[in-house]
Amino acid sequence: MKALVLAAANTFELQDVPTPSPRNGEVLVAVRACGICGSDVHGMDGSTGRRQPPIIMGHEAAGVIAAVGEGVTAWRAGDRVTFDSTVYCGACAFCREGRVNLCDARRVLGVSCNEYRQDGAFAEYVAVPERTLYRIPDGVPFEHAAMTEPVSVALHAVARVAFAPRGGAVVIGAGTIGLLIVQALRVHGCEPIIAVDVDPSRLDRAFALGAHAMIDARHADVANEVRQWTNGLGAGAVFEAVGTDETVSTAIASARKGGAVVLVGNVSPHVGLPLQQVVTRELALYGSCASAGEYTSCLDLLARGSVRVAPLISAVAPLEEGPEWFRRLHARENGLMKVVLRPSQ
Image (cartoon, rainbow, N blue to C red; front, side):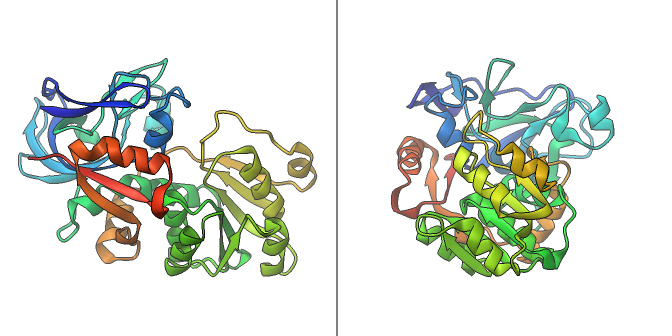
């Protein structure tokens, strides 16, 4: 099969590689669409340490079952599916609690790090465990179904904290995940929703997708403007979707006393923490890692149009054009958001 392989840092090759065979409890999926995640873009240059070459990246995917392995009875060839990017064991204490994103043996498709290597879906085929499969509703195209994974990340982040809908929420970073968090907050009836970014085009998208206020962090004291929108208190919940020292500090400064900050972004492996602000204002900090069973809800929201992903997809391109789109995304060209690659089958 053809696969887009990260052969070295910043170097992709379209290679002929063996087609995987589904093992017991697995299915082979013919990939119809796979989104380029921001973590892939940041990982391709080696800066995160989680895309160590050679590796087939790609974890936001959808397709058609091509074959099933032994023991698989609930699925058959021809079924339209998407799948959880987390490969979990199903047996550890966390899996038994339904917290599969914290599985002791957790792997992520398309990730290669010091602990493991798991080829992903920038390829014509990928083998995945049947327990990670979800059926795509009629009327949802593959390109949209491939966005189920980032939608699930957003829904999980919002679910991490109980907040009063009228307490206001801030989303720092209006990239793909941030814009999906905006929509998830809107579904929950949150008001006001305040989007923060340094890119005016992304702020425009945030407004179109449900944000009530936009703050350009290049020209504003973000925390002060948030207080103006929240009766001087600060937001009840702040979602940080970038992952740098500056944005984490801004998130903490924007929360009201006793509020919550959910850390979703992870561009930087380490960030500084304004500890005294957290302690003296009794802020609750939550990390949000992937998703934990939100896929069914996500697919329902996509099918009903309650969460819209079409405005986030900048291009759908052949797999072989992947290197050029990676370059453009890395350079943040022309306000690009999400690019979906489509293997030629």
